[in-house]
Length: 274
Image 1 (cartoon, rainbow, N blue to C red):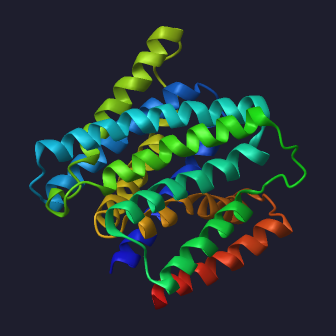
Image 2 (cartoon, rainbow, N blue to C red; image 1 turned 30 degrees about the vertical axis):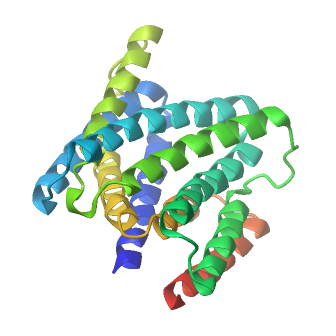
Protein backbone atom coordinates (compact mmCIF):
# COMPACT_ATOMS: atom_id res chain seq x y z
CA UNK A 1 0.00 0.00 0.00
CA UNK A 2 2.85 2.40 0.81
CA UNK A 3 4.38 1.78 -2.62
CA UNK A 4 1.06 2.40 -4.38
CA UNK A 5 0.55 5.65 -2.47
CA UNK A 6 4.17 6.62 -3.13
CA UNK A 7 3.76 6.04 -6.88
CA UNK A 8 0.74 8.34 -6.97
CA UNK A 9 2.99 11.26 -5.97
CA UNK A 10 5.30 11.22 -9.05
CA UNK A 11 2.33 10.53 -11.35
CA UNK A 12 0.44 13.57 -10.04
CA UNK A 13 3.47 15.87 -9.91
CA UNK A 14 4.77 14.65 -13.27
CA UNK A 15 1.46 15.49 -14.96
CA UNK A 16 1.37 18.81 -13.10
CA UNK A 17 4.88 19.68 -14.32
CA UNK A 18 3.92 18.78 -17.89
CA UNK A 19 0.95 21.15 -17.85
CA UNK A 20 2.82 23.79 -15.86
CA UNK A 21 5.77 23.79 -18.27
CA UNK A 22 3.50 24.58 -21.19
CA UNK A 23 1.76 27.32 -19.24
CA UNK A 24 5.05 28.80 -18.01
CA UNK A 25 6.33 29.20 -21.56
CA UNK A 26 3.87 32.05 -22.04
CA UNK A 27 5.83 34.20 -19.59
CA UNK A 28 5.08 35.75 -16.18
CA UNK A 29 6.82 32.79 -14.56
CA UNK A 30 6.59 34.00 -10.95
CA UNK A 31 2.92 34.95 -11.35
CA UNK A 32 2.23 31.51 -12.81
CA UNK A 33 4.07 29.80 -9.96
CA UNK A 34 2.16 31.93 -7.42
CA UNK A 35 -1.17 30.93 -8.94
CA UNK A 36 -0.14 27.26 -8.91
CA UNK A 37 0.97 27.48 -5.28
CA UNK A 38 -2.34 29.09 -4.24
CA UNK A 39 -4.33 26.24 -5.78
CA UNK A 40 -1.90 23.72 -4.29
CA UNK A 41 -2.60 25.26 -0.89
CA UNK A 42 -6.34 24.96 -1.44
CA UNK A 43 -6.13 21.34 -2.61
CA UNK A 44 -3.89 20.25 0.28
CA UNK A 45 -6.21 21.98 2.74
CA UNK A 46 -9.18 20.07 1.31
CA UNK A 47 -7.24 16.79 1.39
CA UNK A 48 -6.07 17.42 4.95
CA UNK A 49 -9.63 17.99 6.16
CA UNK A 50 -10.84 14.90 4.28
CA UNK A 51 -7.96 12.67 5.47
CA UNK A 52 -8.05 13.93 9.03
CA UNK A 53 -5.18 13.69 11.48
CA UNK A 54 -3.85 15.13 14.71
CA UNK A 55 -0.70 17.11 13.92
CA UNK A 56 1.48 18.35 16.75
CA UNK A 57 3.11 21.77 16.85
CA UNK A 58 6.36 20.06 15.82
CA UNK A 59 4.67 18.56 12.74
CA UNK A 60 3.36 21.95 11.65
CA UNK A 61 6.75 23.61 12.19
CA UNK A 62 8.44 20.93 10.09
CA UNK A 63 5.85 21.51 7.38
CA UNK A 64 6.37 25.28 7.46
CA UNK A 65 10.14 24.83 7.16
CA UNK A 66 9.58 22.57 4.14
CA UNK A 67 7.95 25.53 2.40
CA UNK A 68 11.10 27.61 2.91
CA UNK A 69 13.43 24.90 1.56
CA UNK A 70 11.20 24.16 -1.45
CA UNK A 71 11.11 27.86 -2.38
CA UNK A 72 14.90 28.15 -2.11
CA UNK A 73 15.32 24.97 -4.15
CA UNK A 74 13.05 26.25 -6.90
CA UNK A 75 15.05 29.47 -7.23
CA UNK A 76 18.35 27.58 -7.47
CA UNK A 77 16.89 25.17 -10.02
CA UNK A 78 15.56 27.85 -12.35
CA UNK A 79 18.71 29.93 -11.93
CA UNK A 80 20.74 26.91 -13.02
CA UNK A 81 18.41 26.14 -15.93
CA UNK A 82 18.52 29.70 -17.25
CA UNK A 83 22.27 30.24 -16.89
CA UNK A 84 23.81 26.79 -17.45
CA UNK A 85 21.10 24.68 -19.12
CA UNK A 86 19.39 21.49 -17.97
CA UNK A 87 21.99 18.93 -19.07
CA UNK A 88 23.91 18.84 -15.78
CA UNK A 89 21.68 20.80 -13.40
CA UNK A 90 18.66 18.51 -13.89
CA UNK A 91 20.18 15.08 -13.17
CA UNK A 92 22.42 16.38 -10.36
CA UNK A 93 19.40 17.99 -8.65
CA UNK A 94 17.28 14.86 -9.10
CA UNK A 95 19.85 12.44 -7.70
CA UNK A 96 20.83 14.74 -4.83
CA UNK A 97 17.17 15.28 -4.00
CA UNK A 98 16.75 11.50 -3.65
CA UNK A 99 20.01 10.89 -1.76
CA UNK A 100 19.17 13.32 1.08
CA UNK A 101 15.98 11.56 2.28
CA UNK A 102 17.59 8.14 1.75
CA UNK A 103 20.52 9.20 3.93
CA UNK A 104 18.22 10.69 6.56
CA UNK A 105 16.10 7.54 6.66
CA UNK A 106 19.24 5.41 7.07
CA UNK A 107 20.32 7.51 10.06
CA UNK A 108 16.88 7.42 11.69
CA UNK A 109 15.72 3.88 10.83
CA UNK A 110 18.94 2.03 9.99
CA UNK A 111 20.05 0.31 6.81
CA UNK A 112 17.34 -1.18 4.57
CA UNK A 113 17.33 -4.83 3.54
CA UNK A 114 19.78 -5.91 0.82
CA UNK A 115 17.06 -6.16 -1.83
CA UNK A 116 15.49 -2.78 -1.01
CA UNK A 117 18.93 -1.17 -0.71
CA UNK A 118 19.85 -2.52 -4.14
CA UNK A 119 16.59 -1.12 -5.50
CA UNK A 120 17.38 2.31 -4.07
CA UNK A 121 20.86 2.32 -5.63
CA UNK A 122 19.51 1.17 -9.00
CA UNK A 123 16.77 3.80 -8.68
CA UNK A 124 19.34 6.57 -8.24
CA UNK A 125 21.03 5.41 -11.44
CA UNK A 126 17.64 5.49 -13.19
CA UNK A 127 16.92 9.03 -11.98
CA UNK A 128 20.31 10.16 -13.28
CA UNK A 129 19.83 8.56 -16.71
CA UNK A 130 16.31 9.92 -17.16
CA UNK A 131 17.56 13.38 -16.26
CA UNK A 132 20.22 13.28 -19.01
CA UNK A 133 18.27 15.33 -21.53
CA UNK A 134 21.49 16.67 -23.01
CA UNK A 135 24.18 13.93 -22.79
CA UNK A 136 26.75 16.19 -24.44
CA UNK A 137 26.55 18.88 -21.79
CA UNK A 138 29.87 20.05 -20.43
CA UNK A 139 30.71 19.38 -16.82
CA UNK A 140 31.19 22.74 -15.18
CA UNK A 141 31.37 23.68 -11.53
CA UNK A 142 28.66 26.35 -11.71
CA UNK A 143 26.11 23.89 -13.11
CA UNK A 144 27.12 21.38 -10.46
CA UNK A 145 26.69 24.03 -7.76
CA UNK A 146 23.17 24.93 -8.84
CA UNK A 147 22.21 21.28 -9.22
CA UNK A 148 23.57 20.33 -5.81
CA UNK A 149 22.04 23.36 -4.08
CA UNK A 150 18.57 22.81 -5.52
CA UNK A 151 18.77 19.05 -4.95
CA UNK A 152 19.76 19.49 -1.31
CA UNK A 153 16.90 21.93 -0.76
CA UNK A 154 14.34 19.62 -2.38
CA UNK A 155 15.79 16.70 -0.43
CA UNK A 156 15.43 18.66 2.80
CA UNK A 157 11.82 19.41 1.84
CA UNK A 158 11.10 15.71 1.38
CA UNK A 159 12.92 14.82 4.61
CA UNK A 160 11.09 17.40 6.71
CA UNK A 161 7.71 16.15 5.51
CA UNK A 162 8.79 12.54 6.03
CA UNK A 163 9.82 13.21 9.62
CA UNK A 164 6.31 14.29 10.59
CA UNK A 165 4.29 11.85 12.69
CA UNK A 166 2.01 9.19 11.24
CA UNK A 167 -0.96 10.77 13.02
CA UNK A 168 -0.35 14.16 11.39
CA UNK A 169 -1.88 13.12 8.09
CA UNK A 170 -1.48 15.70 5.32
CA UNK A 171 -1.74 18.71 7.64
CA UNK A 172 2.04 19.47 7.68
CA UNK A 173 1.89 20.27 3.95
CA UNK A 174 -0.57 23.13 4.58
CA UNK A 175 1.74 25.54 6.49
CA UNK A 176 4.48 24.67 4.00
CA UNK A 177 2.31 25.86 1.12
CA UNK A 178 1.37 29.01 3.06
CA UNK A 179 5.06 29.82 3.46
CA UNK A 180 5.74 29.00 -0.21
CA UNK A 181 2.94 31.33 -1.36
CA UNK A 182 4.26 34.12 0.86
CA UNK A 183 7.81 33.51 -0.40
CA UNK A 184 6.86 33.80 -4.10
CA UNK A 185 4.60 36.78 -3.42
CA UNK A 186 7.49 38.56 -1.69
CA UNK A 187 9.72 37.92 -4.71
CA UNK A 188 7.07 39.36 -7.03
CA UNK A 189 6.76 42.50 -4.91
CA UNK A 190 10.53 42.95 -4.67
CA UNK A 191 10.97 42.56 -8.43
CA UNK A 192 7.80 44.55 -9.17
CA UNK A 193 6.53 41.93 -11.57
CA UNK A 194 2.97 41.10 -12.58
CA UNK A 195 1.04 39.33 -9.85
CA UNK A 196 -1.49 37.71 -12.20
CA UNK A 197 -0.65 35.04 -14.80
CA UNK A 198 -1.61 35.52 -18.45
CA UNK A 199 -5.38 35.68 -19.07
CA UNK A 200 -6.80 32.31 -20.02
CA UNK A 201 -4.24 30.30 -18.06
CA UNK A 202 -5.93 30.32 -14.65
CA UNK A 203 -7.88 27.11 -15.33
CA UNK A 204 -4.65 25.28 -16.19
CA UNK A 205 -2.76 26.67 -13.20
CA UNK A 206 -5.69 25.50 -11.06
CA UNK A 207 -5.32 21.99 -12.52
CA UNK A 208 -1.57 22.04 -11.91
CA UNK A 209 -2.10 23.23 -8.35
CA UNK A 210 -4.68 20.55 -7.60
CA UNK A 211 -2.44 17.81 -9.01
CA UNK A 212 0.52 19.21 -7.10
CA UNK A 213 -1.48 19.10 -3.89
CA UNK A 214 -2.39 15.46 -4.48
CA UNK A 215 1.27 14.68 -5.19
CA UNK A 216 2.56 16.40 -2.05
CA UNK A 217 -0.18 14.90 0.09
CA UNK A 218 0.35 11.32 -1.07
CA UNK A 219 4.12 11.72 -0.83
CA UNK A 220 3.82 12.89 2.78
CA UNK A 221 1.66 9.90 3.71
CA UNK A 222 4.13 7.50 2.05
CA UNK A 223 7.20 9.25 3.51
CA UNK A 224 5.79 9.00 7.04
CA UNK A 225 5.98 5.22 6.58
CA UNK A 226 9.18 4.85 4.49
CA UNK A 227 11.09 8.05 3.78
CA UNK A 228 13.81 6.47 1.62
CA UNK A 229 11.46 4.76 -0.85
CA UNK A 230 9.04 7.70 -0.97
CA UNK A 231 11.92 10.13 -1.56
CA UNK A 232 13.20 8.10 -4.50
CA UNK A 233 9.75 7.84 -6.05
CA UNK A 234 9.25 11.57 -5.56
CA UNK A 235 12.32 12.35 -7.68
CA UNK A 236 11.02 10.06 -10.44
CA UNK A 237 8.33 12.66 -11.17
CA UNK A 238 10.70 14.14 -13.76
CA UNK A 239 10.54 10.88 -15.69
CA UNK A 240 6.74 11.01 -15.69
CA UNK A 241 6.94 14.57 -17.02
CA UNK A 242 9.19 13.36 -19.83
CA UNK A 243 6.67 10.65 -20.75
CA UNK A 244 3.82 13.17 -20.96
CA UNK A 245 5.97 15.55 -23.01
CA UNK A 246 6.67 12.73 -25.47
CA UNK A 247 3.03 11.62 -25.65
CA UNK A 248 1.35 15.00 -25.92
CA UNK A 249 3.99 17.59 -26.92
CA UNK A 250 5.96 15.64 -29.51
CA UNK A 251 9.27 15.79 -27.65
CA UNK A 252 11.83 13.05 -28.19
CA UNK A 253 13.82 11.12 -25.64
CA UNK A 254 17.47 10.19 -25.94
CA UNK A 255 18.63 6.60 -25.82
CA UNK A 256 20.14 7.29 -22.42
CA UNK A 257 16.74 8.41 -21.11
CA UNK A 258 15.08 5.34 -22.61
CA UNK A 259 17.62 3.16 -20.83
CA UNK A 260 16.83 5.07 -17.63
CA UNK A 261 13.16 4.09 -17.85
CA UNK A 262 14.18 0.43 -18.13
CA UNK A 263 16.48 0.77 -15.12
CA UNK A 264 13.63 2.43 -13.18
CA UNK A 265 11.43 -0.61 -13.78
CA UNK A 266 14.18 -2.85 -12.39
CA UNK A 267 14.52 -0.59 -9.34
CA UNK A 268 10.77 -0.63 -8.71
CA UNK A 269 10.71 -4.42 -8.99
CA UNK A 270 13.51 -4.79 -6.43
CA UNK A 271 11.79 -2.45 -3.98
CA UNK A 272 8.46 -4.31 -4.33
CA UNK A 273 10.21 -7.67 -3.86
CA UNK A 274 11.98 -6.31 -0.76
